[in-house]
Image (tube, rainbow, N blue to C red; front, top):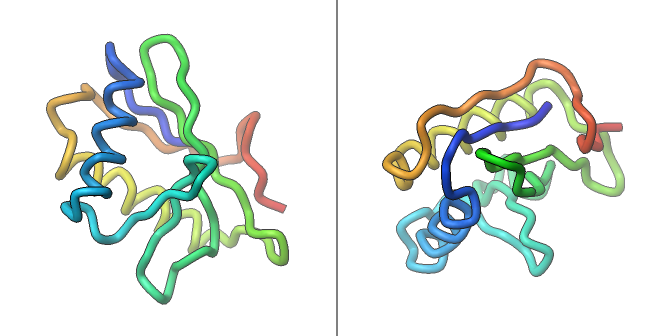
Length: 111
């Protein structure tokens, strides 16, 4: 259950998305002091987090469950789909493609 954004500059992509949040251009996502992203819509807020990491040629985001619950398939789909949507709208020139896995991967914490 990971997101992969293919890019030559993964650090720049990550910092650009955070700057877009800070500037108020991205209103549906926030990030915490650890750098993890969560959806800000009341219906989806804090139901999961997307934890970024940098790999050669890509920005990786793994899904992390809240302390008191597991990540449901509905939350997985919403978080992954809407994050790709936001990155495409606000940072489309900084990556060449995005991919969401259909099953948990190393680094995901879903249950």
